[in-house]
Amino acid sequence: MARIPYVDQEELPVDKQSLLDTLSDETDPSEDRGHSLRGGTLNVYRAMANNVALLEAFQTYGSAVWDESGLSPREREFVILSVAFRTRSRYEWHQHVRVALDEGVSPDDVRAVSSGDHDRLEPEIAAIVDYVAEFVDGSVDDATHDRITAHYDDEEVLGIGMLAGTYLGLARVLDALTVDTEVEFVGWDLENL
Image 1 (cartoon, rainbow, N blue to C red):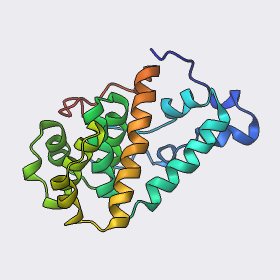
Image 2: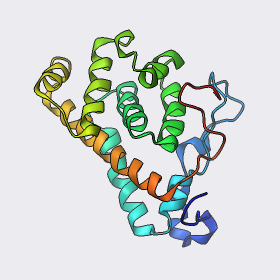
Image 3: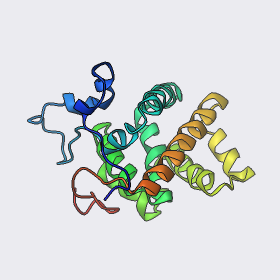
Image 4: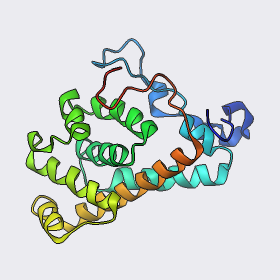
């Protein structure tokens, strides 16, 4: 159970209620997405709505990092999944397994992140996963930096770092507040997919 209350949309001022809308609310529930995970009003935003100004600012900043990292949606999801796994953020992992699958990442490739079997991923994706692991630990060495720059230019490397940093900070907030997944946790090995 979360350590702060979840705010419902109708509790917000009318001009701020859209902050609790998510793109996943617009998804047709009858659409075959190849998995059972669904979106809806996200508990992360409901928790953050305890401070509407910060929620609004976070969404603006988060959208910029999400959209302007220079990465493809698939690459972006490997960054976020890697942060989520490395920090053991159940909430981030659960949400971004759904997003990753929607972006065409296979369940086997998601499992490669959690199993540590990065060698079965494409070299550029494996470089992201390994880079992010060291980033989260605060220990990116020269060899790992050189490996990522063999696949990505400076703009994209900065995008990887900014995206990983954003989700690292969010993971710590979610953990401190014990924000719950909206439905049963998908599992680190996707056992509840």
